[in-house]
Length: 258
Image (cartoon, rainbow, N blue to C red; front, side, top):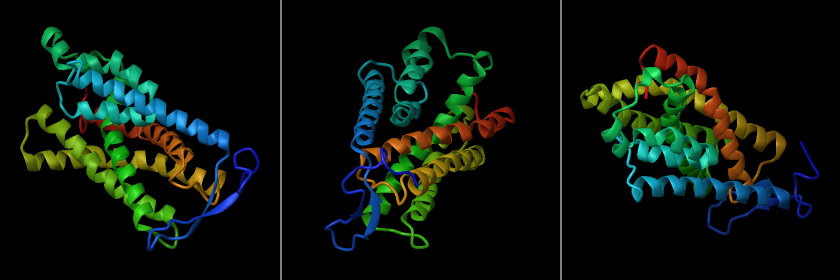
């Protein structure tokens, strides 16, 4: 357990009490002020990056040829921030409708491997991100626990929500690319993205466990910016733990090259 500069000087540990009826009492550590400032900065940069991408897509006339990517790119920016912004303007815009109509779709076989892999992971990553955010707030609002611990409830609901939304995102990628029916599309999406989602969530959960149980034990409150900054870092870790699985899924043809 770390003390000192990572923790606020007063109060070092507080009871996170909510006045709403039924809210569970749980002890949390308050992050140091400088960490909270960094957290707000990280969130602001990420939201600004997502907003820039969204504005370019909606108002700038760069809607993606595959509509689900209109969601994938800004959602990815919620945890990758400026990196996602750079990727969108250097790689993502290439598959927008105006560019495709003018130059045609890029040949995925000629694209750099890191480009193809990043897009493959971003699909499940976007679904996982939205699912994780929704599940985290549900656990908080409903004061849910599993085996007496809110973190385990986070793990369970995060995975369930992430799996559903991840499969949904993959469905809207595979069906138009393969031109297949709904039932075949659902099965193809499940087959293509389940292992990817598991791999992504393993990295995410490892990060969550480290910052809630080790670095900031007994855990940061979800109402702090520091908590969500650490979630961003955990999602980035999940992105990399999903990399080998996605490389294999693309290689055997279960996921599409983009």
